[in-house]
Length: 85
Image (tube, rainbow, N blue to C red; front, side):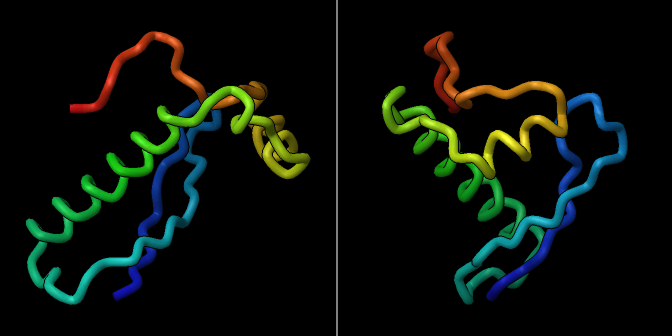
C-alpha cells in the first residue's frame, strides 16, 4: 500500500511542506500500525545514512540545488557518533 504523507521540512522555511511517499505492507490496518511502520521506515533510512562513508556522501547537482533553497548545503553526515534508539 502506497501512502502520501505531507511532512513539514526542518529549517528556516516556516510552513514548507513536502509530500513524502511511503510503501507499507498489507497488514497495516490501524493507526497504531501505520505510525509504528512509519517510524520503522524512517529509522531504517536514518541508519542507512549514518553508515555511509564520506566518499558515498558526494552531492549531486540536484542535491546542491535543493539544499541551496534552505540556505545550507551539507553532506548529511552526523559527526557526533549518536545512534537512533
